[in-house]
Length: 605
Image (cartoon, rainbow, N blue to C red; front, side, top):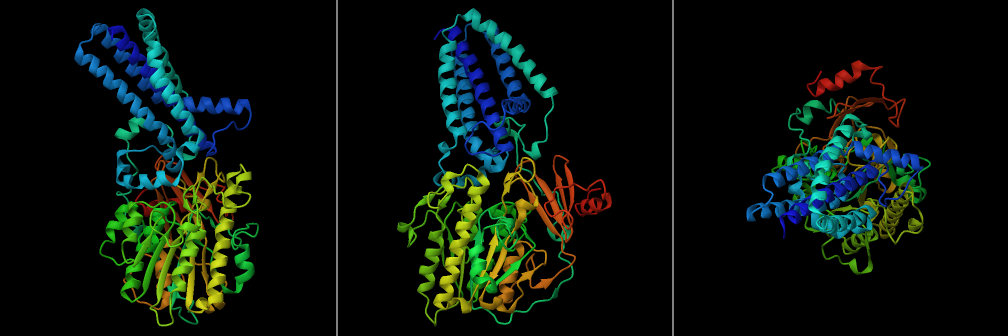
């Protein structure tokens, strides 16, 4: 290969790297705006051009990196116009690195869509999640990734070959001019500034972030027990009788307002309440600590707030019995059924205190009767497997604790098994249809418990792991990066004939930390002290602490009246939920004293 072709190929690789980088940033912007799983034109031509301009403003790092690389090649070609073997190897290595990292960025669109941040070395601890994630979804079903791979192949392979055919003098002039133009674009787009876009971490270059970035750390915060104490408690409710068995149903991606008990206009659970309202106690004010399934699983099973991270919380309770271990030690049969993707943290908890634990890759007794969805298996399989286990129980069998974790309402809200789902392009409608589907399966299961006579001795506790957002606040979609009510308010129901003598509604402020203490309180079992409380008690001064390390990272508090949220970027919000249950009106300026009291809990002024 001639010296001119060596440098021409390198110039083509840098330009291809820039083109793919701009496409990735634009795709991420579309996810931030509306989180569409099928990238397609939305709105007017003017609005689309505006979005493109904003994506360029967020791409100043892409321009700066490309300008620096081109400048380095221009200087190197003038210093070494006839590159030796080492220089040729270096240029080829550069081309390889650019090609591989840009391809990683393309697949990183899916990662960004889920986490609203770019992959970093900190995330390597979750690498065990990758096989299950890949097995649970078709990456190429997302148009942005399919287009990205196609553009990557054409530009990364074809563009260098095409540029190498040009006369060397033209390539040299274009490279020099490209440095000026691209550097100018970097300066213009940087100077233009960038909107907040509801806290999406769009600005970092994915490649730079992969090497130098890191997830937000909350290690600098005081312990949760100090910043959000439960306060004085007193018992206000006493079960009329004690159940012998427990079924725990964890609902995936189910906000409280998708359930009819919390929202009369919602269709989720209508059949359940129509048939069994007299058996249901609704806990009105339960909020997830963090808006992701792993943190909820840690809270529910380990009774520990997932701070500073879920993995740190799991290590903190290494010598503290989990809910399953507590019940197993008291003679309970214990089973866990999860038919969706899990991660190493959830798997570690699943290995503690369960006689039998199934995930989506296990051998299920009923698997042959069910088909895959985009995030595992249809939730019919969960309840069918549960019925198989319970139907084997005899009158003299030990009591049992059965935990099931649903998955159908997980994005991208697709299933061939739910009528009407494939005919709607509205993500919220598809999600609500899936919530309805799961709640109807729960109604079937509870009806079977009653018909079989098992309901008389069994309490069914149902709780959401986190909420789900559909633009209730600008740019807030899915669940992971915000701490608004739609991300955190979850349903919690107790089902038992005549409600165990408990009222139809309980208003005590609670969290997933309280699920374990409430269950053992219902059973009348003594357990080691946990961070939560039984929701059969009253704690009027209760304060909940919230956090998320996805996106830029946020912390927040909720008490009986107010919600306060602080982002690591400096955005501060205060809402009065009594006057504004949807948390739409920031009253920070009107009540600086309330915000200051919340800030003081974090040791900040």
